[in-house]
Image 1 (spheres, protein in one colour):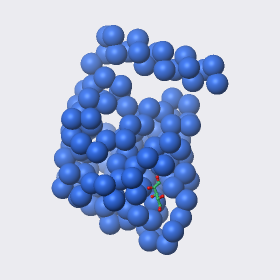
Image 2 (cartoon, helix red, strand yellow):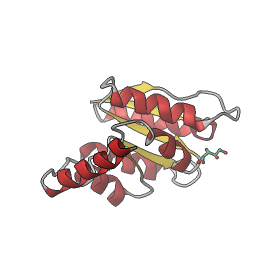
Image 3 (cartoon, protein in one colour):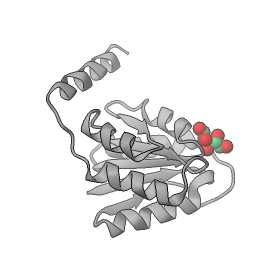
Length: 147
Ligand code: RB5
């Protein structure tokens, strides 16, 4: 899979670790984040990754800011994006299995690098279950269409 990875200034080191880890799992990792620790605006990177995923340039995305929240809010404004903040492995697995999340986000100030890698692995290895879960995703998209 091609994984688009984005981050703000709080997550430069963690982004590098996560990218290496994604590659070690046999996936392609594309960097859409910043390499600078100078304060910057997380919506820019949330949007970049979301647009790449929505356009099919990447199969899924990983976003990292201080908490994971701001960058996920930005990503979720892009049509077709389902970005879930995951601070634990179970949420990471279930958000793929049930919500077919096409991006996950987490916080560099919230999770350490080992936990971040466990979250990434759980998400990348999980599979969408379809069925009743697809109906619910369709309902989410109907809300999106209403604007
Ligand atoms: C930056 O200080 C911080 O606000 C940002 O990384 C993120 O946590 C926002 O949700």
